[in-house]
Length: 175
Image 1: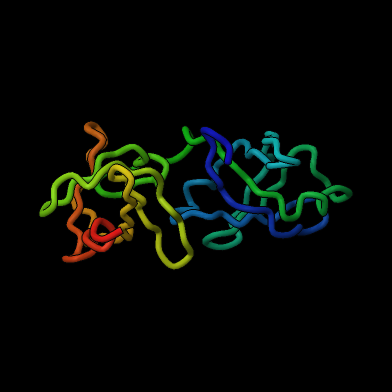
Image 2: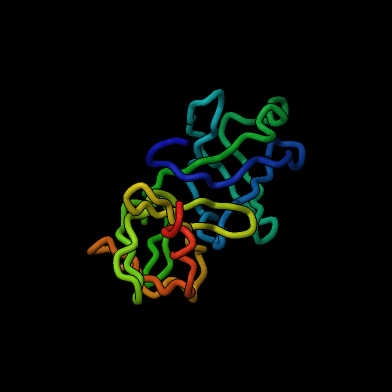
């Protein structure tokens, strides 16, 4: 939605009597965000920076945060607001772990079938993320699961995969 920013989470409710807010952090590693200095609020389609005064950990995916300029009188106005951070704030990943946005444009090489095409996007469905690959006019969908992804080469922008027999044929045959 916003170039160079990633969705961090959402303000779920207020906490206490001094304008603190509870933030749900949408991350596998929410502890990486316990020391933020600022967060971008999405307000009317714009990203507005808000500066953090204090952060307390509520549980594994929730933080209690006191922001500058938010007090007991206006805290309710921000419930439901989506939160963003610059992509540069994402912790670096290595090995076969990757952020969905970082592999867009990577070439996909199957160990048995060769080049499948280029990753157009990663579709983040609730049950399963799916890599969407374009091979000419054809679209190939591969689930993001560890057994299928063998190697992510960031330097050469290549993802090596081992798809199950018949999966790719479903997309390339017929139509």
